[in-house]
Amino acid sequence: MISAKKLTKKLSKKKQMGHFVIIGGGGYLGANIIHRLQKHGCENKIIVVDPYPRAFQTISINRDNVTFIKKSFLDSSLLDVVLKNAEAVFHLAAVGHTGLIAGNKDYVFDFNVNGTKMLVHKCQEHGVSRFLYASSVAVSFIGQPLNNVSEDEPLPSAEKYLDYYSASKAEAEIFVLSQSTPKFKTTALRFRGIYGPEDPNVTHKVATLIKNGLFVGKVSVHGRESKSNASSGANCGQAFELADKMLQKPDGLHGRAYYIMDEEETGQYQFWTPLVLALGKTPPSRFIPYELMRVVVPQFEHLCYGLLKTAPLLTKFELSILATDNTYDISRARNELGYKPEPSLMSEVAKYYQTLEEQSIVSSFTTWRLIVTSMCILFFSIAVLYLIPLI
Image (cartoon, helix red, strand yellow):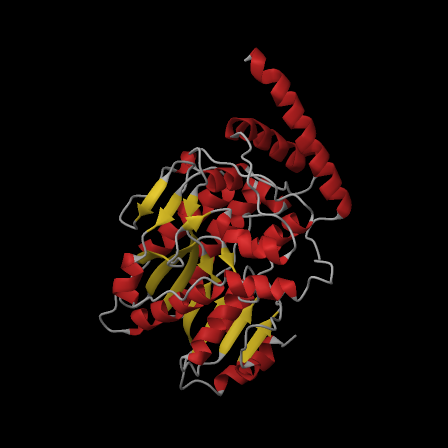
C-alpha cells in the first residue's frame, strides 16, 4: 500500500495535468469507468480509493497509470492528500443496497449522506473542478409503477422510500446537485441493476439463485411479467466519460441528473433467460401471488436483520421493483451528453458463465444461510396461507 509521502511525491510529477480520483472505484463500475476513460484518450493519472479493490479479467485497463489506495474515503487526512491538485472526482462509494448493513439506518445514512457531504466539502476546499456522483433509480422508485419516467419528475418525499438506501441516495444526490457552480460543476448519473460478465453484485446474486434452484417463480402486480431497463457496466462507463467531457466545457451543463440505461426495455425475468439457460436451468414460468409475497417478505426481512443477523435473499424494495413496471427515459442523456447505449450484454454474461459451468459459483451466501432462509420462506408462506382466510 502506497504511503501518503510517496503518493504526494508521485503526484507532484503530474502537476501540469490534474489527476482524477475515483472514490469506491475498485469494483466493477470503477473498472468500467477507468477502461472507458483510457480508451477515449484520458492521460490523467487516476487514483482509486477503495478498501477492497478487485481485478477483472474481462475489463482491460492500463494499471501503470492507476494508483490503488486500500483505505476508506472517510479518512479526512487521506482526502487532503489525494485531492490536492485533483481535477475531477468520481464518487461511487455507497452502502446499504444489499447485505446485512442495509438494516442499519444510522450507518447507511452516515456513510451515504454525511460521507458524501464531507467529500464534497473537501473537494471544494481543494479546488476540484468536477464532481460526478453515482446515483440510482432508487431515488425515484417508491413501489408505484414508473412509465418512461424522466428527470423532470420531482423526487418523492423522504418518508415514502422503501428502504434506507433509497432515502439516503436521494438525500445525497439532492445535496450534490445543489452544490454545483461554474467553478465546481457536479452531476448525478442514475443507474438500475448494473450488470455484466464479472459483476460481483447483481449478476452474481442472480446467478447464485439460479444455480441453487431458487429462481423458480415470477412475481408481478400487473398480472403479467413486469417491465424495466437495466444498466450494463459498459454503458455506465460510457456515461461517466461523456458526463465528464460535458463538465469540462466552459458552457457545459451542470447540476443535472441523468438516467443511464440500456436501450432495451424487457420483461424483468425474461432479461435473465440467457443466463438461466447457460446454467442449465429452465426459465421460470409460474407466477407467485404478489399479495402473499407482500406479506411474507417484510416479515422475513425483519427476521433476517433482527434475529438471524444475515442478509435476506429478497428485500421489500427488491420485491417491489421486480413486481412493478419501472422504465426510464434516457432522452436527456442522449441529447445533452451524446449518450449512445451499446446493446445488452446478456449474451456475453451467458457466455462467461458457460465457461464456469464446470466450476462451482462462489456464493455470497453460505450453505447454512441458504438452508435457513429457504426454510423461513416456506414457514412464512404456509403461515400466511393459513391466515389469509381469516383476514
